[in-house]
Length: 328
Image (cartoon, rainbow, N blue to C red; front, side):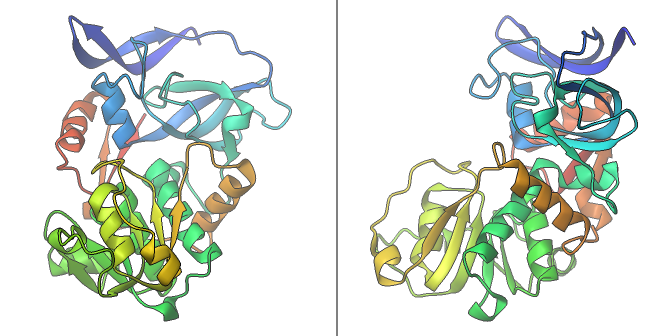
């Protein structure tokens, strides 16, 4: 194999354009594996990388795609062999390192997870980094003592990648789910998410300035940050947990310490990019077994490399719903 197809983003007079091109392969180094990609998925970081965000990707031309799943095609690693099914997400894939929007990726074996039995490459990429982050958020809640008996969990961005999967996992584990979204959703969408109720954007964006609010939920999974995260913390019941994994709203957190010291609320950070391998493997095994969920077709969109542009624009304009998987 001397070359393969990839979605390459190039910079031209300050504009960033992506198209499918032939790219040259390179020699495999010791401790690396070459993976024939079957599926990838589109995440917000990919959309930023494809649009020239230097906070994600500094050097162009570049192949985005922070997720990939497929078959080991060549290996110089003692832990992986030709034919092994594997998953690669996070680390530097698709950021500075050529990513999963390509027929092949070549990565250090320290980034690679053996695909658990019971999970296909397609299912793995329906999850992707978004699903992994959702599962890691639920994992953090449970590890810190959250139980269904404590009350409902609010999930922000409930129609997005992380939020929609977090809702389904929580529902499978018998938690009551309150879906929060900037857009209203119908009964069918709520049912597909496993949510029993929904709340408006205004209800997660308190402007009163009060240090604490009436308790309305037992915990939350937040993907927004900023005042949304502040509101969730101020309205959380005693000993509840709130996870944070995104800052699309803001990276600032303007609040007092009162919810933490008067109600014992915990704020739990979720870092999927550099998650330790033992936890990473545990999460993927949960998604393949006890936490395996059935997805509704209308929230899963499939494209090939030449259809990526449309979905990237939808994501950048915050009009994307559900998950976008990329078939190679």
